[in-house]
Length: 286
Length: 322
Image 1: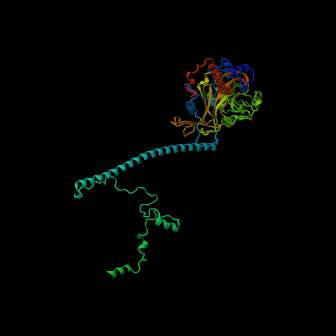
Image 2: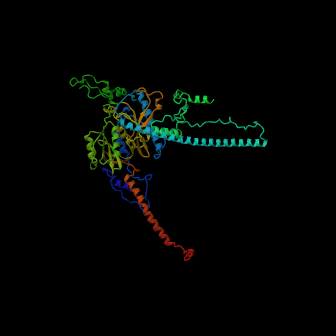
Image 3: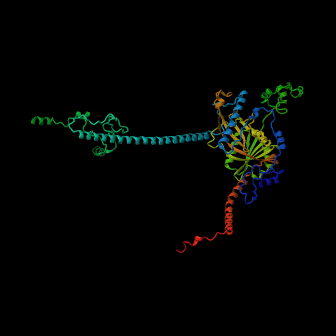
């Protein structure tokens, strides 16, 4: 790589701060455009191991310093971790930290040091409470979104199944109807053939017990009690007397003929009786 | 005037150091200057515990600065690291012309800090991190990638501000000398001193440094383990321990190691390192190459046609003039 060769020229005893800033000389030939990092690009990279180790001795903390000062744990990574596989990489870091913490906790426990934070220890945390609140809000909304998606999926499935069941039922009903008509026709034919004077032996085997009998429409009006003769339409205020009377007379599903009903008022209502005229009329005739 | 130094670490050190010290003769009790009491064991013992005379005290102080024109994401990263390290001091932005070594060294001396984390941002796109040990110590320059700050809502953990971290390293730090140096510097910079003023008591978070693909990856996790007492974990507690990521996250690519602070002889160069400028230039060249290639292909085709001309087509005149 041209870049590194150029840096070498500047190297050794100078302050090297600017290498990232200066322009890269374009010297690639025409045919090798797009060359990525080679396996061992520059064999002449500097590596002064002795000096490094010497300096390490200089700056390092004394060898027998108490572990409590450093609190470091080493962990073996095992095999090679693939950088590009995010999940595997993060898992490797996680296991490293987990294993390290386990070892550290064992050590700390044996040293009888107080290392676990009690739940009522309130002190400044590294993230503010407002921020944690935001995080909580986000987690909750995510959970809600997932649940809603699940519900919607379930509803869709249920609808599909319900549709199938409904189709089945319809088919069944049509079939039954057809069968009934057929059986009536057959019976009629039989009677025709065998003469009409038979009597009622060959009552058509109308199997009433087969189905569940005559069922009134199961569609319930919401909020209507079964004993309500007006069909839930008695309570309809704020309509004005004109509207109400017209509804009752001509309206679809208006008040169901409550005009002639024996209520408390009408039994004791003798307005229409004028001294029992009708009785006298009848007596006169007969 | 009896005791010259505070013996805060003395009981811990003395407990480990039980050998009687025969080499150093005891001082005769002076009556004039107050060494009236005979030197207690703690005074004699530390001759071999830790360094020469005194017990080891971590007096590390880190200076954290950045260059001007730093991008917001990197500034937040710097602030996050500042909050993780209670023994760190933040200083104002350094002018880019001044960041040539000497000014920064003077700044370190002025603030009496023993190490420095200097965030240098170039072109508002690339972040370089310098880890420097102050008086003549080595310095390492890294390129920082994959930055995620603590502000991200996906990082849900939280821990005490200023509590001492547990630091875990992967074992490949011990394989090569330059990684050993990196490990030592990371330990010294990131480990909170034991008796620091701002350090909080418990240990509830852990750093994870690992080397993958020649890069140093950093993760910070909160430790959550169900417990009732503060100095003992319950029976099955260690198995039920979970780690929740707190952040920040970053990935360091070592570029060079220098012998002095902010300069000096180069001791190590990373052979696999390509500067971001070069990467961008390569990409642009690839894109530019597309058009050039097309033109070349056209010319080549023309040459080819000229060389091998087609025979005249027999059926060319078939439908003509009908």
